[in-house]
Image (cartoon, rainbow, N blue to C red; front, side, top):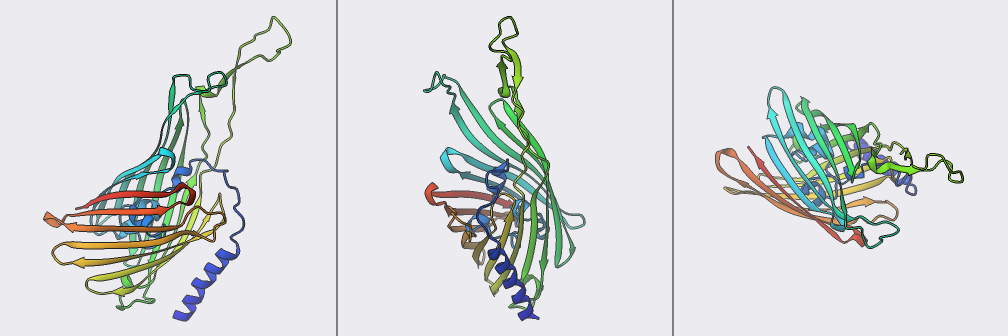
Amino acid sequence: MKNFFINIILLLLMINVAFANRPYRVGTTAGNFLEIGFGSRGFGMGDAVVSSSYDLSSMYWNPAGLAFMSKSEFQTMYQPWISDISTSFAGIGIVSPQLGSFGIGFFQTNYGTIDVTNMVMQEGTGEQYSANDYCVNLTYARKLAQWFSFGSSFKYISSKIWHTSASAFALDLGVVVNTFFFSPTGNREDGLAIGMSISNYGTKLKYDGIDLLQPIDILPDESGNYQNVEGKFNTLAWELPLIFRIGFAFFPIVTANQRLTVEIDALHPNNNSESVNIGAEYSYRIPAFGKIYLRTGYKALFLEDSQYGVTFGAGFKKNIFNNMALRVDYSYRDYGVFGGLQAYTFSVTF
Protein backbone atom coordinates (compact mmCIF):
# COMPACT_ATOMS: atom_id res chain seq x y z
CA MET A 1 0.00 0.00 0.00
CA LYS A 2 2.83 2.39 0.82
CA ASN A 3 4.48 1.75 -2.56
CA PHE A 4 1.17 2.36 -4.27
CA PHE A 5 0.79 5.71 -2.51
CA ILE A 6 4.34 6.73 -3.46
CA ASN A 7 3.58 5.92 -7.09
CA ILE A 8 0.43 8.07 -6.96
CA ILE A 9 2.41 11.05 -5.61
CA LEU A 10 5.13 10.66 -8.24
CA LEU A 11 2.52 10.33 -10.98
CA LEU A 12 0.81 13.56 -9.91
CA LEU A 13 4.12 15.42 -9.91
CA MET A 14 5.09 14.05 -13.32
CA ILE A 15 1.71 15.05 -14.74
CA ASN A 16 2.18 18.54 -13.35
CA VAL A 17 5.63 18.87 -14.95
CA ALA A 18 4.51 17.33 -18.23
CA PHE A 19 1.73 19.87 -18.65
CA ALA A 20 3.80 22.84 -17.46
CA ASN A 21 3.69 24.64 -20.80
CA ARG A 22 4.90 28.10 -21.58
CA PRO A 23 3.19 30.76 -19.43
CA TYR A 24 -0.47 30.95 -20.45
CA ARG A 25 -2.89 33.86 -19.99
CA VAL A 26 -0.29 35.97 -18.21
CA GLY A 27 -1.66 39.44 -17.44
CA THR A 28 -5.30 38.45 -17.90
CA THR A 29 -6.44 38.68 -14.27
CA ALA A 30 -7.00 41.55 -11.84
CA GLY A 31 -6.49 41.71 -8.10
CA ASN A 32 -3.14 39.95 -8.39
CA PHE A 33 -2.17 41.11 -4.90
CA LEU A 34 -4.19 38.04 -3.86
CA GLU A 35 -1.28 35.89 -5.08
CA ILE A 36 1.22 37.47 -2.68
CA GLY A 37 -0.12 35.78 0.43
CA PHE A 38 0.75 36.33 4.07
CA GLY A 39 2.58 34.54 6.86
CA SER A 40 6.37 34.31 7.23
CA ARG A 41 6.20 30.58 7.92
CA GLY A 42 4.78 29.86 4.48
CA PHE A 43 7.14 32.30 2.78
CA GLY A 44 10.17 30.71 4.44
CA MET A 45 9.06 27.28 3.20
CA GLY A 46 8.76 28.39 -0.42
CA ASP A 47 4.96 28.73 -0.21
CA ALA A 48 4.75 24.94 0.27
CA VAL A 49 2.35 24.77 3.22
CA VAL A 50 -1.06 23.84 1.82
CA SER A 51 -1.17 20.64 3.91
CA SER A 52 0.89 21.70 6.96
CA SER A 53 -0.28 25.24 7.78
CA TYR A 54 -2.11 25.04 11.11
CA ASP A 55 -1.94 28.66 12.28
CA LEU A 56 -3.94 31.76 11.33
CA SER A 57 -2.08 32.16 8.02
CA SER A 58 -3.89 29.04 6.80
CA MET A 59 -6.72 31.45 5.99
CA TYR A 60 -4.71 32.16 2.84
CA TRP A 61 -2.97 28.86 2.05
CA ASN A 62 -5.76 26.43 2.93
CA PRO A 63 -8.72 27.41 5.15
CA ALA A 64 -9.10 23.80 6.32
CA GLY A 65 -5.86 24.17 8.30
CA LEU A 66 -7.63 26.54 10.68
CA ALA A 67 -9.47 23.53 12.15
CA PHE A 68 -6.16 22.15 13.49
CA MET A 69 -5.40 25.26 15.56
CA SER A 70 -5.08 24.21 19.20
CA LYS A 71 -5.50 27.75 20.60
CA SER A 72 -7.02 31.04 19.54
CA GLU A 73 -4.54 33.36 17.86
CA PHE A 74 -3.93 36.97 16.90
CA GLN A 75 -1.48 37.51 14.04
CA THR A 76 -0.06 40.49 12.19
CA MET A 77 2.47 40.72 9.36
CA TYR A 78 4.40 43.43 7.56
CA GLN A 79 6.20 42.84 4.27
CA PRO A 80 8.00 45.50 2.20
CA TRP A 81 7.39 44.60 -1.44
CA ILE A 82 8.84 45.59 -4.80
CA SER A 83 9.26 49.28 -5.84
CA ASP A 84 8.31 50.76 -2.46
CA ILE A 85 5.09 48.75 -2.36
CA SER A 86 4.20 47.33 1.04
CA THR A 87 1.82 44.59 2.17
CA SER A 88 0.39 44.00 5.63
CA PHE A 89 -2.01 41.63 7.37
CA ALA A 90 -3.84 41.51 10.68
CA GLY A 91 -6.29 38.90 11.84
CA ILE A 92 -7.67 36.87 14.69
CA GLY A 93 -8.79 33.26 14.93
CA ILE A 94 -11.07 31.86 17.63
CA VAL A 95 -11.18 28.15 18.46
CA SER A 96 -14.47 26.70 19.71
CA PRO A 97 -14.29 22.99 20.64
CA GLN A 98 -18.01 22.57 19.92
CA LEU A 99 -18.42 24.70 16.80
CA GLY A 100 -15.03 24.72 15.05
CA SER A 101 -12.61 27.53 14.24
CA PHE A 102 -13.50 31.04 13.09
CA GLY A 103 -11.18 33.61 11.58
CA ILE A 104 -11.33 37.17 10.33
CA GLY A 105 -8.45 38.90 8.58
CA PHE A 106 -7.58 42.07 6.72
CA PHE A 107 -4.89 42.01 4.02
CA GLN A 108 -3.74 45.22 2.33
CA THR A 109 -1.33 46.22 -0.42
CA ASN A 110 -0.29 49.88 -0.48
CA TYR A 111 1.38 51.28 -3.60
CA GLY A 112 2.36 54.59 -2.02
CA THR A 113 1.90 58.04 -3.59
CA ILE A 114 2.68 58.75 -7.23
CA ASP A 115 3.13 62.09 -9.04
CA VAL A 116 0.46 63.04 -11.55
CA THR A 117 1.85 63.80 -15.01
CA ASN A 118 0.40 64.57 -18.42
CA MET A 119 1.70 65.28 -21.92
CA VAL A 120 2.12 68.98 -21.16
CA MET A 121 3.55 68.69 -17.65
CA GLN A 122 5.68 65.57 -17.82
CA GLU A 123 7.65 66.53 -14.71
CA GLY A 124 4.46 66.58 -12.66
CA THR A 125 1.40 68.74 -12.15
CA GLY A 126 2.00 69.16 -8.44
CA GLU A 127 -0.74 66.64 -7.64
CA GLN A 128 -0.27 63.14 -6.31
CA TYR A 129 -2.46 60.08 -6.30
CA SER A 130 -2.40 56.79 -4.44
CA ALA A 131 -3.42 53.23 -5.12
CA ASN A 132 -4.23 50.39 -2.75
CA ASP A 133 -5.87 46.98 -2.69
CA TYR A 134 -7.37 45.18 0.25
CA CYS A 135 -9.20 41.98 1.10
CA VAL A 136 -11.43 41.20 4.09
CA ASN A 137 -11.45 37.49 4.82
CA LEU A 138 -14.02 35.54 6.88
CA THR A 139 -13.08 31.91 7.48
CA TYR A 140 -14.75 28.90 9.05
CA ALA A 141 -13.17 25.46 9.46
CA ARG A 142 -14.14 22.32 11.29
CA LYS A 143 -12.86 18.81 11.81
CA LEU A 144 -15.39 16.34 10.43
CA ALA A 145 -13.19 13.61 11.93
CA GLN A 146 -9.95 13.66 13.89
CA TRP A 147 -8.10 13.07 10.63
CA PHE A 148 -10.18 15.14 8.20
CA SER A 149 -11.00 18.86 8.13
CA PHE A 150 -12.90 21.15 5.80
CA GLY A 151 -12.70 24.93 5.60
CA SER A 152 -14.04 27.81 3.57
CA SER A 153 -13.32 31.54 3.35
CA PHE A 154 -15.56 34.32 2.11
CA LYS A 155 -13.70 37.35 0.75
CA TYR A 156 -14.59 40.92 -0.05
CA ILE A 157 -11.98 42.37 -2.42
CA SER A 158 -11.46 46.04 -3.23
CA SER A 159 -9.02 47.73 -5.59
CA LYS A 160 -8.63 51.50 -5.96
CA ILE A 161 -6.46 53.70 -8.21
CA TRP A 162 -6.98 57.42 -7.51
CA HIS A 163 -10.73 58.00 -8.15
CA THR A 164 -11.32 54.67 -9.91
CA SER A 165 -12.20 51.52 -7.99
CA ALA A 166 -13.50 47.99 -8.36
CA SER A 167 -14.78 45.33 -5.99
CA ALA A 168 -15.54 41.63 -6.04
CA PHE A 169 -16.52 38.69 -3.87
CA ALA A 170 -14.70 35.37 -3.77
CA LEU A 171 -14.73 32.00 -2.06
CA ASP A 172 -11.86 29.75 -0.94
CA LEU A 173 -12.37 26.05 -0.22
CA GLY A 174 -9.96 23.52 1.25
CA VAL A 175 -9.54 20.12 2.85
CA VAL A 176 -6.78 18.43 4.88
CA VAL A 177 -6.49 14.67 5.36
CA ASN A 178 -4.07 13.03 7.81
CA THR A 179 -3.02 9.44 7.12
CA PHE A 180 -0.91 6.74 8.77
CA PHE A 181 1.45 6.54 5.79
CA PHE A 182 5.14 7.09 6.61
CA SER A 183 4.34 7.87 10.25
CA PRO A 184 7.54 7.37 12.32
CA THR A 185 5.47 7.07 15.50
CA GLY A 186 2.48 5.13 14.19
CA ASN A 187 0.19 8.06 14.99
CA ARG A 188 -1.98 9.56 12.29
CA GLU A 189 -0.98 13.15 13.12
CA ASP A 190 2.63 12.24 12.32
CA GLY A 191 1.80 10.53 9.04
CA LEU A 192 1.49 11.83 5.50
CA ALA A 193 -0.82 14.87 5.31
CA ILE A 194 -2.68 15.68 2.10
CA GLY A 195 -4.09 19.14 1.50
CA MET A 196 -6.05 20.67 -1.34
CA SER A 197 -7.43 24.16 -1.80
CA ILE A 198 -8.96 26.38 -4.44
CA SER A 199 -8.60 30.14 -3.96
CA ASN A 200 -10.38 33.21 -5.33
CA TYR A 201 -13.35 31.60 -7.03
CA GLY A 202 -15.73 34.49 -7.43
CA THR A 203 -17.01 37.48 -9.34
CA LYS A 204 -15.00 39.70 -11.68
CA LEU A 205 -13.39 43.08 -11.04
CA LYS A 206 -14.63 45.95 -13.19
CA TYR A 207 -13.16 49.41 -12.60
CA ASP A 208 -15.37 52.48 -12.55
CA GLY A 209 -14.99 56.08 -11.41
CA ILE A 210 -14.72 59.72 -12.44
CA ASP A 211 -11.21 59.20 -13.84
CA LEU A 212 -12.83 57.34 -16.73
CA LEU A 213 -14.86 60.39 -17.77
CA GLN A 214 -13.53 62.22 -20.82
CA PRO A 215 -15.14 65.13 -22.74
CA ILE A 216 -15.49 64.37 -26.45
CA ASP A 217 -16.61 66.16 -29.62
CA ILE A 218 -18.62 63.68 -31.63
CA LEU A 219 -18.42 65.88 -34.77
CA PRO A 220 -15.04 67.63 -34.62
CA ASP A 221 -15.26 68.90 -38.22
CA GLU A 222 -18.61 70.67 -37.74
CA SER A 223 -19.34 73.85 -35.80
CA GLY A 224 -22.42 74.56 -33.75
CA ASN A 225 -22.65 71.12 -32.12
CA TYR A 226 -21.90 70.20 -28.55
CA GLN A 227 -18.13 70.15 -28.28
CA ASN A 228 -17.82 68.75 -24.77
CA VAL A 229 -20.20 65.85 -24.57
CA GLU A 230 -19.49 63.77 -21.48
CA GLY A 231 -17.98 60.48 -22.55
CA LYS A 232 -16.80 57.55 -20.48
CA PHE A 233 -14.39 54.69 -21.06
CA ASN A 234 -16.19 51.37 -20.63
CA THR A 235 -13.71 48.98 -19.02
CA LEU A 236 -13.88 45.21 -19.22
CA ALA A 237 -14.49 42.94 -16.24
CA TRP A 238 -11.43 40.95 -15.23
CA GLU A 239 -11.24 37.55 -13.60
CA LEU A 240 -9.59 37.03 -10.23
CA PRO A 241 -6.39 34.93 -10.00
CA LEU A 242 -7.85 31.47 -9.46
CA ILE A 243 -5.36 29.03 -7.90
CA PHE A 244 -5.72 25.29 -7.30
CA ARG A 245 -3.19 23.77 -4.89
CA ILE A 246 -2.50 20.20 -3.84
CA GLY A 247 0.21 19.34 -1.35
CA PHE A 248 1.79 16.42 0.48
CA ALA A 249 3.60 16.85 3.80
CA PHE A 250 5.48 14.18 5.73
CA PHE A 251 7.50 14.19 8.92
CA PRO A 252 10.73 12.15 8.76
CA ILE A 253 11.79 13.18 12.28
CA VAL A 254 9.33 13.19 15.17
CA THR A 255 10.66 13.04 18.75
CA ALA A 256 9.72 14.62 22.05
CA ASN A 257 11.74 17.75 21.23
CA GLN A 258 12.27 17.69 17.46
CA ARG A 259 10.10 17.68 14.37
CA LEU A 260 11.03 17.91 10.71
CA THR A 261 8.36 18.81 8.16
CA VAL A 262 8.92 18.34 4.42
CA GLU A 263 6.26 19.39 1.91
CA ILE A 264 5.76 19.35 -1.85
CA ASP A 265 2.96 21.41 -3.43
CA ALA A 266 1.74 21.51 -7.02
CA LEU A 267 -0.05 24.65 -8.28
CA HIS A 268 -2.41 25.18 -11.20
CA PRO A 269 -3.29 28.91 -11.66
CA ASN A 270 -5.54 30.43 -14.30
CA ASN A 271 -3.00 33.10 -15.28
CA ASN A 272 0.25 31.18 -15.63
CA SER A 273 1.65 27.70 -16.19
CA GLU A 274 1.81 24.99 -13.56
CA SER A 275 4.64 24.89 -11.03
CA VAL A 276 5.88 23.08 -7.93
CA ASN A 277 6.87 24.48 -4.52
CA ILE A 278 9.02 22.59 -2.02
CA GLY A 279 9.77 23.47 1.57
CA ALA A 280 11.03 22.18 4.90
CA GLU A 281 10.79 23.25 8.54
CA TYR A 282 12.81 22.02 11.51
CA SER A 283 11.44 22.76 14.97
CA TYR A 284 13.17 22.17 18.29
CA ARG A 285 11.43 22.41 21.66
CA ILE A 286 13.38 23.98 24.51
CA PRO A 287 11.92 23.09 27.91
CA ALA A 288 10.63 26.07 29.91
CA PHE A 289 11.09 28.35 26.87
CA GLY A 290 9.14 27.16 23.85
CA LYS A 291 10.27 26.31 20.32
CA ILE A 292 12.67 27.56 17.69
CA TYR A 293 12.16 27.11 13.93
CA LEU A 294 14.42 26.94 10.87
CA ARG A 295 12.92 26.91 7.38
CA THR A 296 13.93 26.78 3.75
CA GLY A 297 12.31 26.13 0.40
CA TYR A 298 12.17 26.85 -3.30
CA LYS A 299 9.24 28.45 -5.08
CA ALA A 300 7.96 27.90 -8.63
CA LEU A 301 10.06 24.97 -9.82
CA PHE A 302 9.53 24.23 -13.55
CA LEU A 303 8.01 27.69 -14.15
CA GLU A 304 9.56 29.17 -17.28
CA ASP A 305 11.30 32.55 -16.91
CA SER A 306 10.56 32.54 -13.19
CA GLN A 307 12.02 35.25 -10.95
CA TYR A 308 11.24 33.20 -7.86
CA GLY A 309 13.94 31.21 -6.13
CA VAL A 310 15.27 29.97 -2.83
CA THR A 311 13.65 31.00 0.45
CA PHE A 312 14.78 31.02 4.08
CA GLY A 313 13.07 31.58 7.37
CA ALA A 314 13.45 31.38 11.12
CA GLY A 315 11.39 32.03 14.20
CA PHE A 316 10.67 31.23 17.79
CA LYS A 317 7.69 30.60 20.04
CA LYS A 318 8.05 31.81 23.64
CA ASN A 319 5.73 30.53 26.34
CA ILE A 320 4.43 33.31 28.57
CA PHE A 321 1.91 33.52 31.39
CA ASN A 322 -1.50 31.81 31.57
CA ASN A 323 -0.78 29.34 28.75
CA MET A 324 -0.23 32.19 26.32
CA ALA A 325 2.63 32.22 23.82
CA LEU A 326 4.39 34.82 21.69
CA ARG A 327 5.60 33.78 18.25
CA VAL A 328 7.92 35.77 15.97
CA ASP A 329 8.74 34.62 12.42
CA TYR A 330 11.00 36.04 9.73
CA SER A 331 11.42 35.08 6.08
CA TYR A 332 13.66 36.01 3.17
CA ARG A 333 12.80 35.28 -0.46
CA ASP A 334 14.95 35.64 -3.56
CA TYR A 335 13.02 37.37 -6.35
CA GLY A 336 15.70 37.45 -9.03
CA VAL A 337 16.07 40.87 -10.67
CA PHE A 338 13.80 42.35 -7.99
CA GLY A 339 16.22 41.43 -5.22
CA GLY A 340 15.40 39.91 -1.87
CA LEU A 341 12.10 40.36 -0.04
CA GLN A 342 11.66 40.08 3.71
CA ALA A 343 8.57 39.54 5.85
CA TYR A 344 7.97 39.83 9.59
CA THR A 345 5.12 38.08 11.39
CA PHE A 346 4.08 38.39 15.03
CA SER A 347 1.53 36.12 16.69
CA VAL A 348 0.02 35.69 20.15
CA THR A 349 -1.83 32.50 21.07
CA PHE A 350 -4.25 32.45 23.96
